Image (cartoon, rainbow, N blue to C red; front, side, top):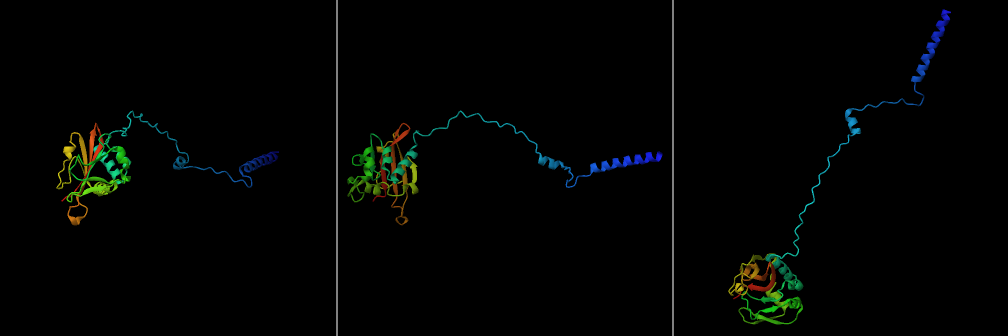
Length: 240
C-alpha cells in the first residue's frame, strides 16, 4: 500500500513536471519574443520631448507714412540734370516741358547774352525745333563776325551739346567756371535773387591745344517758389 501510494505520487509529480516543461517550450517555427532595452540617449532620440516655443511678439503697425517725393519741386541740380539728359538725347518734348511758360527759352551762343538778338522760343516751338529745317540767324561768329546762319539741328551740334558734358564736365551751381575773353553778363541779365544757373564745364578736349578747346554750357532757371523753369541755355568757349 505504502509502495503503491509512493508510486502514484511519483507519477503525479512527473506528470506535473512534464506539463510545465511543455508550456515553457516555444512551438516549432515560432521565435521567442525579445525584449528591447534602450539607453537613455536612445530613448531621447526616439521620443523627442516636444517643446513649446514662446509666442512671437509682433510690433504694432507704424503710424508713420513713407514720405512721398513725387510732385515735390526738384532742386536746381536735379532740374539741370534732367534738362541735360534731354539735350544729350535730343528729347525736345522733355526739354520743352521745362521751358518757362511765359518767357520761353533763349539760346545764347557765347557768354555774353544779347537780349536783343538772341533767339527765344516758346514751349510749342521748342518741341519742333530739331525737325525744323528753317535756317535762322543766331548772331555772329566770334572773331570773324560772320553770321551764324544755321538750322537748329546744326546750331545744336555747334553751340549746345558740342561736347560730352554729362560724362566729363565739372558742375557748379551759381558759380562760373569757364572764362574767356568775352564779357560774361549772365548775372546782369539773370539776377541772382530771381534766377539760378548750373554750369557744366570741360577744361579741354584735345590735350595738344592746351585748353583752347574748353567748353561750358550754362542752364539758367527762373525761381518760381520752390520750383524752377528753364529760361536760358548759354554756350561758352574759347574765343579770339
